[in-house]
Image (cartoon, rainbow, N blue to C red):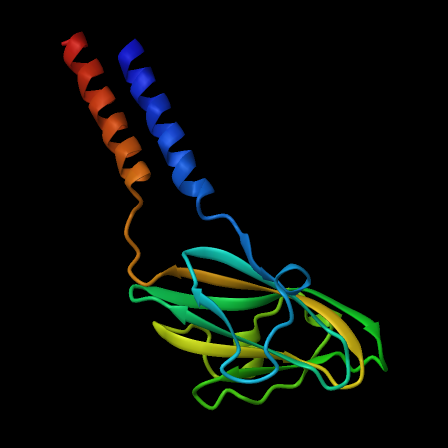
Length: 184
């Protein structure tokens, strides 16, 4: 019984490590890493990893655009680009504007603080997920000054049970088998 408890504890520790590795990470902060490209192809974020990756930027006005280029690797899909923060520092309340490329998803209306929590993919076009490939997203402004944050949410295309869950299930079944065997 003591050994079974040790095995279950070990499986829980390993499982928590797998879950913790999927937490959000800031992959680009314009305040630290420098100004984002004003035109395509955009500042390269590289291949987005599984989980949530955050981009933080600011639009100082004067018709500034921030373009980001990113890649979704084979076996992964982009589930969303969530507007996680937006502040209009100055301006007439017009917010910013969004764009997306390729695939004819270049047009989108303004985005404001009222859209925090919404998905850029839902706002900009007819798709809710993107498969493997290279894409660009734009945040722009007219004369107003804005700050923003986008959360890029990436998941596996093929849903496969994680090893820690399977290990816990196996250990539980083995424990039941051993306990029944001793009683018999």
